Length: 251
Ligand SMILES: Nc1ncnc2c1ncn2[C@@H]1O[C@H](COP(=O)(O)OP(=O)(O)OP(=O)(O)O)[C@@H](O)[C@H]1O
Image 1 (cartoon, rainbow, N blue to C red):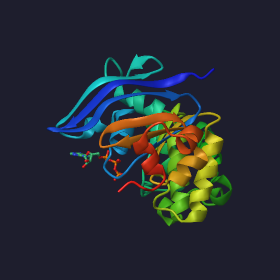
Image 2 (tube, protein in one colour):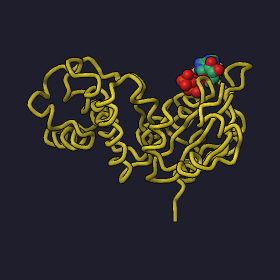
Image 3 (cartoon, rainbow, N blue to C red):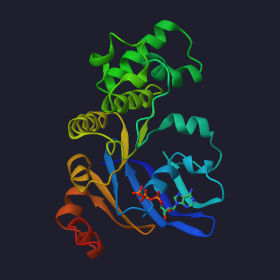
Image 4 (cartoon, rainbow, N blue to C red):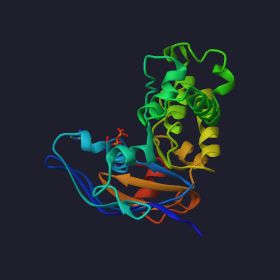
């Protein structure tokens, strides 16, 4: 029996007059990986950002419909800071803060009021272990994070997201700036993280979606064309447009 973590109903999003999302309906299943695929500009990132209200920061944006996290509407009667603690995000380009590795990971817990050094030490170690970076950095936690490689920086950003103990992790093309080896490490990590977290990942790579996701959503020009089990979407899609896209026939 699968549990729904986030349910999306009749979601429309406008940037000014332009409608970027058209009547999206989807259930994101707890502790599964959901991949969002589709051509450039189809609305994947926009959709991802509606899940923790990152679009609120954009001017002239209008959102209607429902996004419910554990049954509670995230657009009404909810503290946005708390929402973003529960629904963390990792971006396309690794974006560590220009401070030490330790301080990057401790940043979130500190803003949520944790001050005790022993507690922070524990969170930093646990988060870095969680993002499979601990062994590589444990002897240089006080060094600047900008000295890490791109792949290490991205795992640091994942550790930073994990440090506030989120329930959902949104990942916007987290491997697009990485080489194949660093990409494989992040993919392995996603596989491990789904034991504990619900993961939604935007990817341009259909191979990646096929490798790491349980469910896949195919978007086209702001519409959700097809959503279902990844194995089914890739082997036997219902919609001709999905088939054209995954077989590379799409222009
Ligand atoms: N802040 C904004 N203001 C106006 N239009 C926007 C804004 N952000 C995105 N758009 C438009 O909304 C549409 C969807 O963009 P979005 O970034 O969600 O697509 P995407 O599928 O993630 O694309 P990509 O794969 O290239 O990252 C595009 O037409 C884009 O130009």
